[in-house]
Picture 1: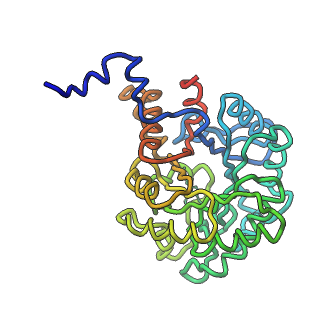
Picture 2: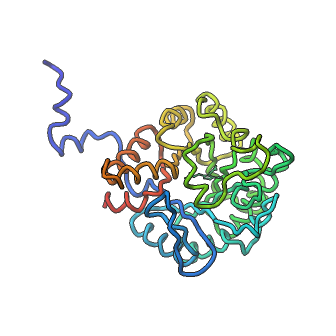
Picture 3: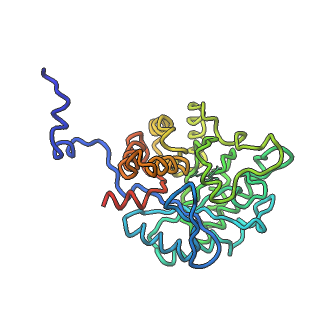
Length: 327
Ligand code: PBG
């Protein structure tokens, strides 16, 4: 036998030398759920180990993450029902929860990359990412709200704004609005290929942000998030986002969509982000909780596979766990 592939696996040293993919804490983004109040943490049942945190606790956890080599956090607010309305106006409040949290994080940890979510759903009484008129989520009337939201977040100090709403044309209007307000250095991480996935369940429960509009036609987000059956459509979204000025392209969910990560990696020179979402994390935790899989090894493997598929950066609720294991 002339070729024995096993020779390249013969020892840890050889395996290290020929390893094709690296995973480090520097590739990770930690998503954080923020709530009003002081010094308190609320567990999220379907996401063991994750909590909704008040501003002070958010800063403390971000400090721990940053100390472990995680460069970035992404903020998601749980907004009180009383502050929700059809247009998500609370998202523009300069003293709103996200804006205050961004300021506190940047004051405490100037080098931490702070990413904010641009979408109406946490702020909308309809629970949709855009404005609802009748039984439709309307695209163009939503765009100025998204642009204003991004500017409010940039003004508070956000380094990266991440539109997750899947409205058409939003990257361009957000870029224009940011530049016009002087925020030319604020990046846009576009949720480029965001699928209408059932894997978002625990996240919506954590933020109380599930679609709640009464029309049966809008019981889900299928008129704006992508059909899980489609791959070519992701390439079309990528072309548009690139042309509109996106800095990063995000694929979501992660592991079930490795082919999409790979396809975008080959289609664009832009950095690709993958989001290991709440339902994926819940699966790992639940199986491990039953003693059926090893959480730590499966977490690292799933993140490594996202990197191998072509993701530059990975959003994961397991970021702190992974960083600790990676050492
Ligand atoms: C909404 C948003 C969602 C997630 C991130 N931003 C949920 C949704 O689209 O309904 C999901 C993240 C996760 O499941 O971890 N703008």
